[in-house]
Image (cartoon, rainbow, N blue to C red; front, side):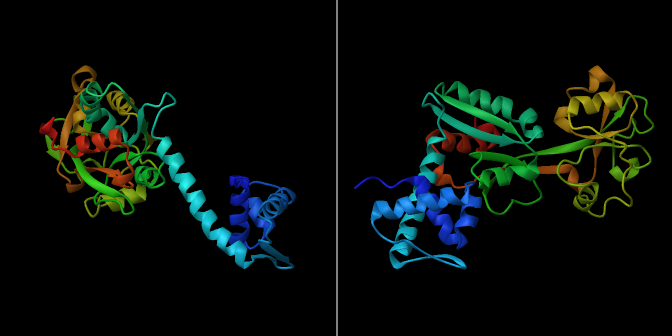
Length: 299
């Protein structure tokens, strides 16, 4: 007997789930005639009637229902095999897909990845920068193997582990009216334009995140994603800006800026490392996860 054709099984499964060949064809990006031909060829190949066609669409025969159940398992196994092999490069070497937000990439990953890759010359890492809002979804969908995000609480739907903590501060130019304050609440800077950035969420959601610490919204006349560019804009007097303290420290002296400690509770951020399923990681990705969740002084 010839081997079963995977595209035919896919359209057959879709036809049963959609109860219609036309909707199944649409789902699988085929014309209806092509979908119908594939199912007919599958029936000829197995010498069994699999679908009963009627005015309302299609429904499986008992033999068709049995094949549907087995076909679902086959297609799932193929999907898992493709996901597993995708963890290796074209040369067959272990590949890790890592997603992290910009703060993590700048503050924490250079030293961690330097040590990790130095000890594993046969491993490659694809680093994807994304916003924390998106990272858990990328992990849950198996687009990446490991993600690092910051949030008040671990995101549901993935397995999360504490990674690092940081603080954001307020950056102002030398000579600014606030420059001598040392520390303050963001509320005390609301009279000045804020160079903000609110990726994938609105200013209103940022205000909800900040809780009751602000009596009114800040005036945001410009949004700047890149930290260095934000600091350059601050130097030119275009506003004040919230920047992670460790990143801001790189620009203070060279740009004539001052970092003020924010006393707001939300200024301290918790980062998490997350995976979809620890058991599905290849050995190299499992090693990287262990490295990321180890205490900072363990390496």
